[in-house]
Image 1 (cartoon, rainbow, N blue to C red):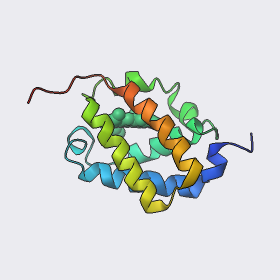
Image 2 (cartoon, protein in one colour):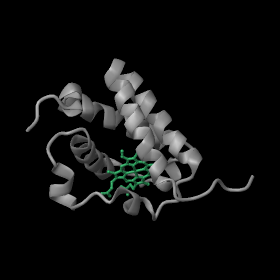
Image 3 (cartoon, rainbow, N blue to C red):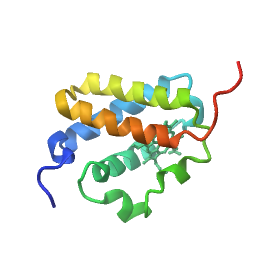
Length: 127
Ligand code: HEM
């Protein structure tokens, strides 16, 4: 295992708290809650596994679920540009709550923003 990874910088415990805080916000968000399951226990568990490897830690997600194919796994859900923004704003609020700060926060948000944009698969609905 490498030692100077973003995963090591944030640490297992803080990453876990971040993901839990994030899904609390998702559950309350009017644009996001309708497309997520009511019980987010399993979603949060998978997200912890995924972010661990995304940040350079052990490949727990791939060991259990195979290649992430993240965009393909999101195709069943209508992900609009507004939903991508909402996802990132929930993540920013979760970072505020668990005190992910400084260069680590900037680095994480930059990467997550690119990934979130990549998940967009549906245009904004007509008003
Ligand atoms: C799963 C929505 C962005 C990682 C899901 C699910 C939804 C969703 C509805 C299914 C939950 C379930 O059935 O348990 C969204 C929306 C996004 C977004 C609206 C806005 C752009 C992202 C990003 C990442 C990510 C940026 C990673 C950095 C995952 C993972 C799963 C998942 C790892 C679990 C996949 C699996 O079932 O194995 N997402 N997502 N998502 N999402 Fe996202």
